Image (cartoon, rainbow, N blue to C red; front, side):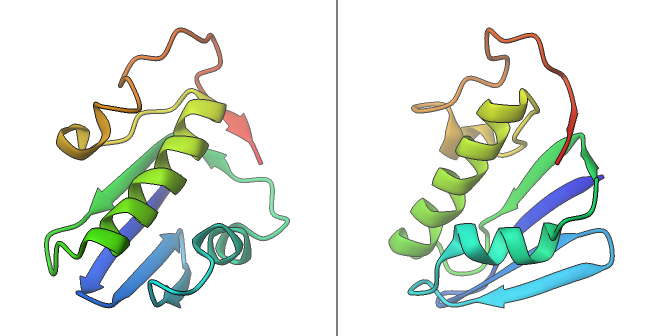
Length: 102
């Protein structure tokens, strides 16, 4: 399963996981929104995708990257948009977990 964080405009994000989706504005809590998408289901996340192409708004981009980094580093799964992520998240972290059910 892939968790996708997409910047759908310069003021709006969409978090998607499987058939679940949750829309956010930059002022909303992205972590809480991500938890709503994932819910209490035991989902195996294998990757996180960032799509930051629409607006490139600084606040929106930073929110996407921070949440993706936190989830990716904790679970040891890759984040695809390494151009944004390299300064604070290595695409091959030095941890052994490759996937984990949430």
